[in-house]
Amino acid sequence: MTHTPQIKIPATYMRGGTSKGVFFRLQDLPASAQVPGAARDALLLRVIGSPDPYGKQIDGMGGATSSTSKTVILAKSNKPEHDVDYLFGQVSIDKPFVDWSGNCGNLSAAVGSFAIASGLVDAARVPQNGIATVRIWQANIGKTIIAHVPMTNGEVQETGDFELDGVTFPAAEVKLEFLDPAAEEEGGGGAMFPTGNLVDDLDVPGVGVLKVTMINAGIPTIFVDADAIGYTGTELQDAINGDPAALARFETIRAHGALRMGLISHLDEAAKRQHTPKVAFVARPVSYVSSSGKTVEAGDIDLLVRALSMGKLHHAMMGTAAVAIGTAAAISGTLVNLAAGGGPRNSVRFGHPSGTLAVGAEAALADGVWSVTKAIMSRSARVLMEGTVRVPGDAF
Image 1 (cartoon, rainbow, N blue to C red):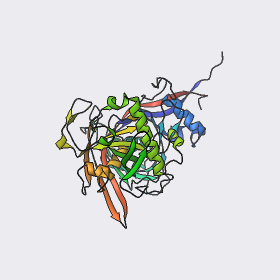
Image 2 (spheres, helix red, strand yellow):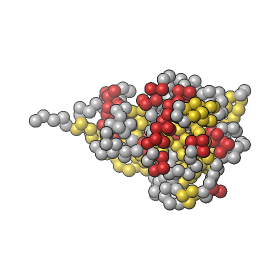
Image 3 (cartoon, rainbow, N blue to C red):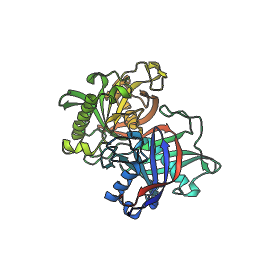
Image 4 (cartoon, one colour):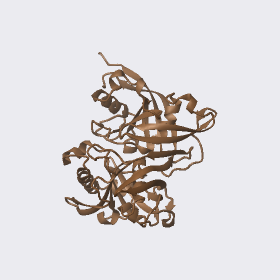
């Protein structure tokens, strides 16, 4: 009986923020997977264990959630004033495709650490002790991210006392700056508000006409008031993910929003573009008990936000969606800003299912057009395992 041997590919399994993913150096991938295309997608699908009709990704590195079905490819950057190119692939769990349409803000926190440890950053730019500034080119959306990575005795410092809700153990703080984060999505024209409005009426079949804020910042996101769709903003995962009818409604909202934002040209295309846009619902602050059992007091937050990723309510908050939240909160009149009490602000702390998160943004209005120079937040990252992943040689 003949068989196809497995091949080994150097890889690192990392946590970044509240996500986990498999990280590769571009140069370590098989030649056919070093360029975009079917071979690369097939390889990453097999690494993660997709498509899996059981939805468990048992035969791969994926963790059967959108937060843990992720891949990253890094290469030394040829762009001026950048150290590394960062390409993110969101791997579908039960379908045979990899979505390259957006960034992962959580895994962005691990990019600088991996780049330094993998020799992708010029050694002269990395201090023995202190903070290494890693200039990242986010290739999916064509944006710059600056990661401030702590260094101790010439190595990336991963342990520390920074606590991040949604992550069990403390670690070292990694500060991230997302520069000019308005997403230049295909069809979106690069505008922060693709319709030109801070709030739109979106007619959603089976749901009705909803007031929505649609924004391209960090990642294209559709915001809706919680009470308009029958929620309070204090919901945890089971309240949404255990309700197939609710998930179907959110997907309908997402598809019609994507069409209105110019991200797709026909509703049928939304099924092949699961990673973007995101859908989130917002509410004014009230006290609630988080998924860890900790009480989040209304007085400690500015608003409540719940967001869906890859068709399910996220257990905490996507980093890119946090950028969208911070940006929208900084602009008077958006649904996010109004839920936070209205008026100008340059930072916001919001409550999510796992706890709270603070994000800052600097927005400005010039000639009737809103822009944001950068959004800032803190995350943490840690290597979980490093070595090689194995895949059957005929898998790609």
